[in-house]
Length: 239
Ligand code: ADE
Image (cartoon, rainbow, N blue to C red; front, side, top):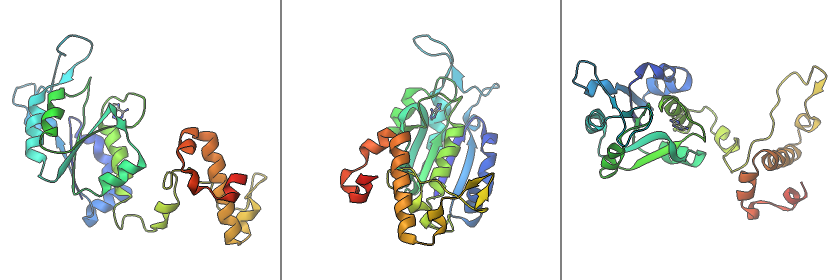
């Protein structure tokens, strides 16, 4: 997968050299380039922002550098992703969709955002997705891009050693995962649930299923309400 990130703070993306994303880059699974938006400015101050039309606080990113940057970086296969608090909530389903695309271009806004014409102009030539990480406001899109790239990269073929991790994990089937434990069996007078040490795979699966349903109902009533009732069997209903 090809990824281009455009930002006025390229240094923000140093973590993308580390761990499994770094490895995906060295093995060629992920072809990722970070671009400095100021490459496409021509005044002495390398200006990227100006005051908003109509007044109001803060600054807005000017369209010219963004237009040139996107012209330079987007291929005919590109999808533009713009993290923004006014975007659609980013979910695991979005991560799967984006992970299946050949080329993603991320535009990191700062200040009060990017001039709307940049997004409208791009949308006339390529798919554009404005996505939000949640109902809070960050300084800019940079950290959001790192989050989204983690969610996507772990879905790319060959990145996770054990592909079962993907089917078992939280949000895979619209439920939260059950609690997990490792050795020692007793720690600070707290015991690992007996069932997990029983070796009875049927009982273990049933226990995990129940914990997953109970946890989801308690912590995420929204997810629980959206869970298809036909996916609940008799034992689930008893739980
Ligand atoms: N940029 C600023 N706030 C954001 C948010 N909540 N999600 C994604 N990008 C953002």
